[in-house]
Image (cartoon, rainbow, N blue to C red):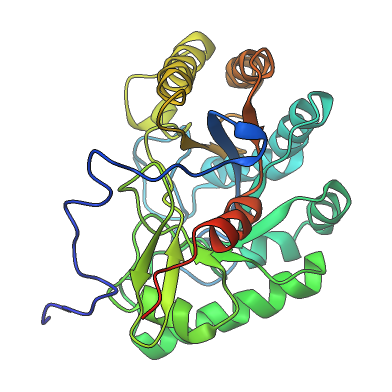
Length: 306
């Protein structure tokens, strides 16, 4: 495959450097915090959907010892939509905190109550694809079709078009071009390279990127050394405290990624609860939706005039 050297995929090792802009967060906040609810359950690969395999990604399963349908792994995904989502939303609601849903369209179609909770809770939606599947095996035309199908579905189930786009882990060389071409997105989050939003050159226009994180993410429960609620809390707390201290002169943003089949379990949710309480004990923290960050950046930090 030939390399794609489009401005939308060209690497940038410099960014803002040592002089990042003052984001001018509302209320002179020292930190903008965005909680991300990854809602994927029901959109993963499965035998029922004709994929010929059971999805094991981000479950308690480290490897299957047999061929064929894995009913145990399927039930772990079901836990996220039956139990985990409601525990996480309760923790947020009790503290008056908002969040952004990285939602797969098919997952919302299969649990209308979650789509209703999004509407009633005032959460925003960043489109996480039609299904929770990698894009790398798709052609550009297939990827475009999947994106359009997902957007239409989310608008039907939640009553709002998704404001942003985030695919499963890694975009293709075509993804950002398709996001820009689609025209309805305020931003995408298919990047992990900064702690502030930034503009990229999209040919005849500019496009906003709001970076996401694999660091402040409950995926570490199954991918690395985080094992307990205290581990999770300590890592998030230390990250928050560092950014909060730096925020006296260089305010940044912090994303926290959550998966309902992981952090939704009680022994992990306890760590999330401790972190949210730690955040609540600080002033000048803007707990916000990704949509709010996008609107703020469009308003306060528009791209340079051509």
